[in-house]
Length: 357
Ligand SMILES: Nc1ncnc2c1ncn2[C@@H]1O[C@H](COP(=O)(O)OP(=O)(O)OP(=O)(O)O)[C@@H](O)[C@H]1O
Ligand SMILES: [Mg+2]
Image (cartoon, rainbow, N blue to C red; front, side):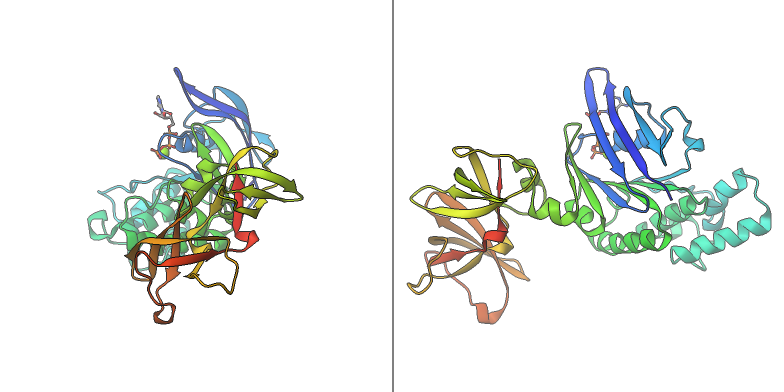
């Protein structure tokens, strides 16, 4: 188990800046995800850590030791890619044994270690199967077993679930997370799927255009994004345009126009001044909606524009002054259904509104 550190790491490909002066510290045993849109530099970052690419500048350290110039095989790193890297002409046993055979370990040791790795990934009894006889999820388990069997200090996973269908992805993400915790191996996981990152990670680095925009726990990233880009990239979001009216400790008043001013939170990593243009982030599930009454003062009032049935939820679009707001309501009969045109009041707690620049 190891810690990883990137110090001012930059990677250029000709004129393309794939990764820009990146500083990261990944703790021992941590499940650390890099999340961002296609082309933002996730794989490049991972490949520099694996040793397949050399940084243009900066250093990479493992356990405090500079590994920037070490070849891949000397780094104690195992990597699993999106496409199942298993050999079609070898059965499962030989696939998993491959790295051990290369290291010239003796037959009995290989048998024992391969058996243990197969148990670890839940494929005991699959030794004789070939690739064509395995499901996508099983192939990725074999790919993981192949890596784990050589006992790397660090596990790198580059979109390992993206070739799987939705149901298999759902299963595998919990499975990988559990496996990682039980092995206790420091893991760097690359994905552009925010739900994978939120479910699996101890911490997430959100990247865009070669830069790490925010690094934090899933809760921090989802509930206290530091920019509009992150708020929109992670989860569904309502972003209500407004202006900072005044600031207080950890919070502010936001003028949403039409005489409506609401209090909201501000992340510690964001600095604002009165008069700044901002957006108030409200997650659709954080807003409560009720037919308009005079008994309770709402944050905003508006009208139902549309309703979409989504099985577990009903999604409403509400027009409130100049703002369009999406509200999600759990699909329970007692919560009823509101038809377009119905006047509604919207409520949310101060906690659930966050201001982003
Ligand atoms: N070998 C290379 N030569 C030239 N440019 C490259 C090379 N590898 C990556 N790039 C460029 O560097 C940038 C980052 O690429 P990278 O593969 O790291 O993105 P990514 O975040 O992994 O994207 P995806 O989600 O699509 O896999 C892109 O603009 C890409 O075109
Ligand atoms: Mg990639």
